[in-house]
Amino acid sequence: MFENLSDRLGGVFDRLTKQGALSEDDVTAAMREVRVALLEADVSLPVARQFVKTVTAKATGASVTKSITPGQQVVKIVHDELIKVLQGEGEPDTLRIDNPPAPILMVGLQGSGKTTTTAKLAKRLKDREKKRVLLASLDTNRPAAMEQLAILGQQIGVDTLPIVPGENAVQIAKRAKQQASLGGYDVYMLDTAGRLHIDEVLMDEVQAVRDVANPRETLLVVDGLTGQDAVNVATEFDGKVGISGVVLTRMDGDGRGGAALSMRAVTGKPIRFVGLGEKMDALETFDAQRVAGRILG
Ligand code: GDP
Image (tube, rainbow, N blue to C red):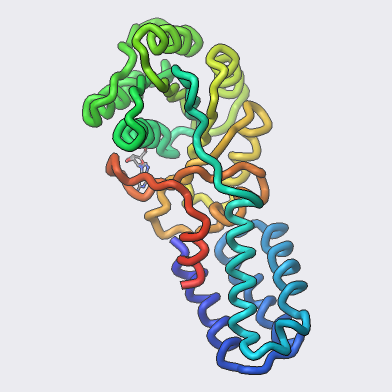
């Protein structure tokens, strides 16, 4: 995912660390290259700009340039700033799924990997946190999507709400809530309908479902390969329905990684998980330390 960025930065920092003594101009020149590398990785311009500005301010001080290992110190500053950009300030947060039954609303555009991610997360909650999970598909326009969730549920051993033809999304959400309470479930997950583009109808429906379910978590699933588009989608969904976190899918693909780097800084929302393949186990919590480590090789 970050191969190109990693190679580019590796080149810049190799030269810096080999150089020994550093002047402010050396650092500034290196940071110009870092900026280009970030933009080529599809990081949003304001984020790349701010990143370089912060690192330059910290790295051009005498305590760095006059130190014994200035190059290594610059790399350390970049590493720490990468973690801040990826994670924001403070500790990584975890899902709020206490007070059963906790509703989780899954939103996103069609094809983003929403249904797959819903099932992956349900499996994770069941296997790792021993939660009883109920899944419900609200995609009334696409019976195939409802069946897909039922099939995935069966495959991972998680219950799905029986499909009742003719119900609308709000009715299904109400039934899921009732079933989750009566059935003693810890969590119920609502897989909302996706659309190819963000439109009023989609947003109205998601808002109506949100108002009925009052979700503890609203997770937006976005395709990590789409770079800045993914960030734009997140901004729009957050403005319209309010999201509590993001899942970036297809991070196993050969995208340039910009979505991961821009998401937190632009939207203020945490990346909670990353999808790394089609299999039901291919979901990892987002770990800024690990990602920063991967970027810096
Ligand atoms: P939805 O329309 O948003 O519900 O999308 P689906 O869940 O049906 O996923 C669309 C396709 O993307 C399916 O073929 C999934 O297997 C695939 N997919 C989902 N997540 C990932 C991922 O993290 N990596 C890869 N490589 N494929 C994924």
